[in-house]
Image 1 (cartoon, protein in one colour):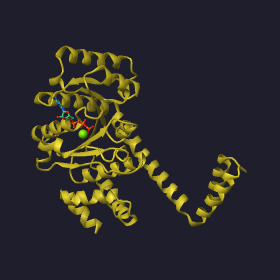
Image 2 (cartoon, rainbow, N blue to C red):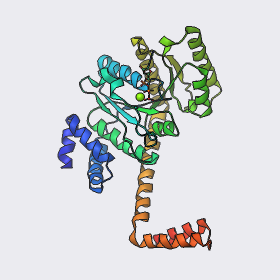
Image 3 (cartoon, helix red, strand yellow):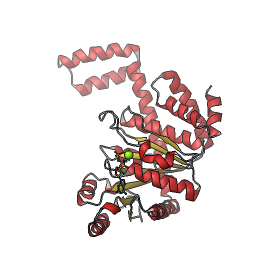
Image 4 (cartoon, rainbow, N blue to C red):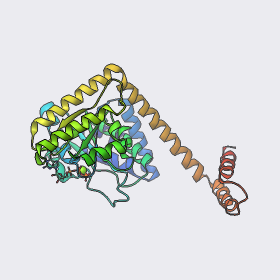
Amino acid sequence: MPTQLFDRIVLGDRLALAKAITLVESQNIEHQQEANKLVSEALKLNKAALRIGITGAPGVGKSTFINNFGSWLVNEKQRRVCVLAIDPSSQKNHGSILGDKTRMETLSMLEDVFIRPSPTSGTLGGVARKTRETILLCEAAGYDTILIETVGVGQSEYLADSLVDCLLLLLLPNAGDDLQAIKRGIMELADLIVLTKSDVTEPAIYNQAISDVANALNFIPNKFEGWTPKVSNYSMHNKEDVAEIWKGLEKFIGHQKSKGHFETKRKAQKIEWLNEAIKGKLESSFFEDADHKNALKNALSELENGAKSLEDIAAKLIDDWRK
Ligand SMILES: Nc1nc2c(ncn2[C@@H]2O[C@H](COP(=O)(O)OP(=O)(O)OP(=O)(O)O)[C@@H](O)[C@H]2O)c(=O)[nH]1
Ligand SMILES: [Mg+2]
């Protein structure tokens, strides 16, 4: 029963949470109905956690960073951490190692930490909706810090940014990586930037990379008025680095809240969510309507014999359906 399941989630039962997320990810109609009830319950609780996205090229060190950062947040800041991974490309890649628990060994062994690898299927919009619902369920379970790992390919950074309060971009200390990020417009999306693997990079090259990225930021329009992303150094072997990065993050969140950007972004995300839900419902009621399936078949022959343009055929189909 969904309500019982929900009660267990609120009590912090991790198995119940995992089961609920499986319902959210399921394509089965009954599962989806159960999931919808759980999500509405979660929405009523209105327990917003801090949502942080971690993005960057494959192999830049995202999972390793989350392992260190997450463990530090649990141990030093007494936060309850949940890690989710989103990977809209994994269908093509036949599953990726993103969010790999073996890279998060320290974190996964801590009490009260929840790690969930990415769902392996779905469109970009579908993955976004399901991740949003998963975030709400994790928040209902009492997690106050949600870390979302996403590999920087395709449009996935935009997707991640639409789900979080702060987007952390991890870059490798070589010009290739920052140039790529500039070219793809990703640098503009970053709220904070971290240069990884300082321990294996020649100090002169590493420091040059830090100042190159900081310089590049001067030529990029600010994402939020009054905020230029801080560029931090990082090595998995230096425990102090995550403390500095957390300071930068707190400063960013403070800025966002004092300027009203925090609430504005959350509100825009809710609207986006609602729009996605509407689009999903419209799409399924259009394509699954039995009468309409016939009309679609007829339209196909009209299209093939070239009697009408594609635009006209689509417009007529929608008109008929609305009637
Ligand atoms: N020397 C060194 N190696 C690192 C550091 N951070 C990560 N690595 C190594 O880099 C490799 C990739 O790290 P991951 O954390 O899996 O990278 P990722 O960005 O999560 O990779 P994908 O999920 O595949 O996109 C691993 O072999 C790590 O041990 C670091 O600070 N220093
Ligand atoms: Mg990873």
